[in-house]
Image 1 (spheres, rainbow, N blue to C red):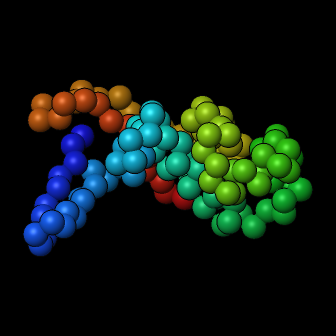
Image 2: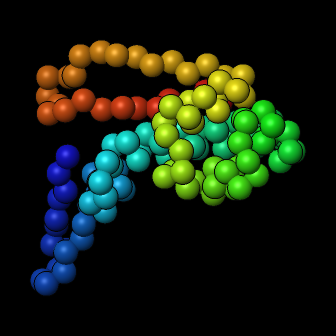
Length: 117
């Protein structure tokens, strides 16, 4: 990924991002952070749609109330991608992982999360 700088007026730069805010902020493990954020969004959508009580959600996910607060607060560093996928399964949704060759024009592979939730 690369960033693009475009000067809109003398002495002023407008920064166009890559589409990955974690990469643009130069955070470590940007791709992993993006994947975890997308998975967290899916979990949050499922929880909202299911209208579970906090107590039921905690029991169903096998987490503490504090962890539920972290999850609903999108604190992605609190969970691994694997654990987030486990939460999705616990909420009665399947997680599908597709492995395919990188498109020739790309320099590296990517992880994309699609959701029907």
